[in-house]
Image 1 (cartoon, one colour):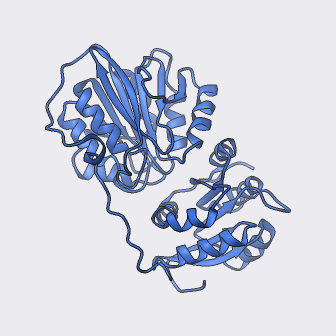
Image 2: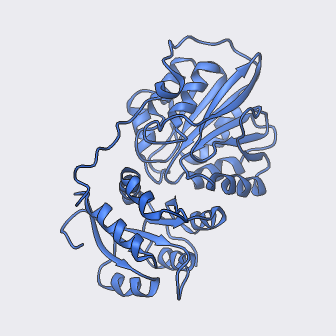
Length: 354
């Protein structure tokens, strides 16, 4: 700890094992500076009074003060990108609602192995969080690690010749998002009436959290929202969300659309991958789809959106001002995949005009 420069990170967790492992893993990256590791929020507050971090990694279940309460206090006092570690889906949704920019799954067993197997994911999460725009809420030893190359959608779907498919009367909306996406998706889906076209969604989120996310949205939306199951039909007035750690593909049988879920390899270091969903939409639905890429870090979805546009689909990227992180939309725009660039508030209208 204590190297100069880089993204300043403070870890708050009552597990000494997790604090030590995260300090070593994150500290091995030259762009990250772990400035502190505290066993509970009260100790962390003393550190914060001396030096405020750029990113906070926060456990939920801790002595003296729970992580959600501490998160709410941070957002009220000095809004800061916070990454939450938890094993509970409903708590993850509470954390996102309270202002967390990222939620990572915390396994109950073999925690140390999980951390050391997830170096790239952890480093990417911190760098993504550091770029996030946070709004005020109401009250090494790893230098020789080989980072796996980014696979493309070819690894799941195989090559595609770009051949267009016939038009149908039904329209499908395909949405991809990452950091900040839970709030953006909630905004869009809560604005849709029951007669909206069918929606298929990839949100980068850990396994088991997507079900809680879908259940929360289903409670507050006019349309039905559910975690996608293999073979689910795509229906008007319904949104299907890719299960965590599973790819979601759009398929066609006659004039009807349905989804499949796939265990294939990580694509753009993600599973589910937006590129996989968008490639399948381009290949199997073409001009019958609207592709929307929203807030998130990295380039997942940029290649797939260009394929969608080339196949005749309408395509939209969320604009920089309304994004928490502009990475994914920016890359899609740069590659020519986005036909239009719109603020978040305009996206529900575009969906209904489909």
